[in-house]
Image 1 (cartoon, rainbow, N blue to C red):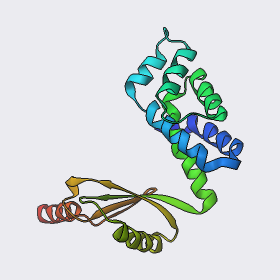
Image 2: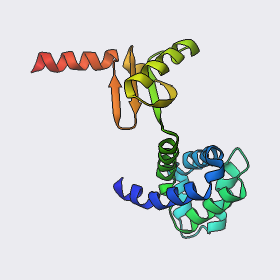
Image 3: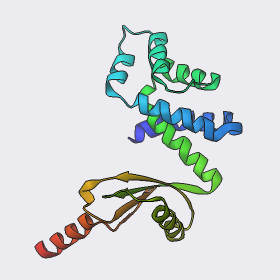
Image 4: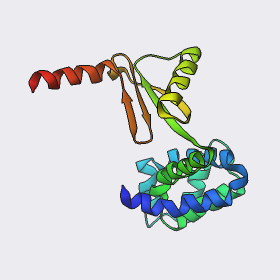
Length: 176
């Protein structure tokens, strides 16, 4: 993983500097490309010596739901020509990190066993912002394995108040 991060960093930096006027728009199409590029079958197709760079570009740009701007097309062509398609998801992560650093925010993923309504999410967001001492971009994902409670991931920090985590703590305390 460190190797992909090293490969992805110059791409993320260059894209961040070049697209300074439309950071959010760039993040949107970059995230979409990252999801597409993360597909193992697509990577295998693009890495095939029988497939030209243009064929790979046409396939990927044909799958994208929204029309890519000219900068997006150029960036995708560059990534394909340099055989760096597998690094695209990491490029998107690093680009987001640069955006967050500039804005003084962080991405937070809240894993919950059950859906969280809008008012509860607003309360949770304000509590988490106080806890992590920064503005958070909160997204919610359901994970039934948690049984109850929530698990929050902000960068490399984790706050786990789930029933599953408490049961694991009890299990290790009883077996120790």
